[in-house]
Image 1 (cartoon, rainbow, N blue to C red):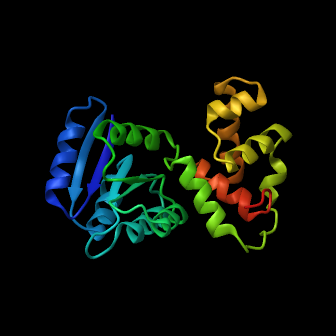
Image 2 (cartoon, rainbow, N blue to C red; image 1 turned 30 degrees about the vertical axis):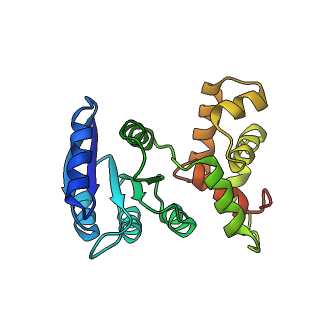
Length: 216
């Protein structure tokens, strides 16, 4: 059972999303709140698997709430940020804060429930085209940061996988490129994330660009 917290200042939207979650046998809404400050408090109290946060909320917006959640010790909750606006700034801030996904509220219910499951598994949910657009926009002019000791721990194949992640390739595309199975790719991705201390593949892409492994 995946335990979920919902945070949105529109009660009707929360009620609708709760109704959708109630139809899924593996999803459970453990709390719903109307502002970001309450979301942070409830997450610290309940430790849900996934938090679905609206960007625009009173007291504390969804992006600031994400930063607070990700910096809280002992909290392993994955955050999905929802918004009605496809804003590069919002996506970038959510990604930098540690969110595992950035989704539009217009997303069909079945895709949102699928996104919650993906986030619970530890993967990121940002469309590849959006990822490329953001990286190109926000890494132009950045000086590469020093190579970290963790990078030297990657095998040659794991470094290949990291570079392909930076190109926003899917597991299937990486498997085709390297002539291996998708399960093998998943293993390589997991090892890359673990060795570099990264939360998901979106942050792996940012890592590759910021450390000068690939150009914008």
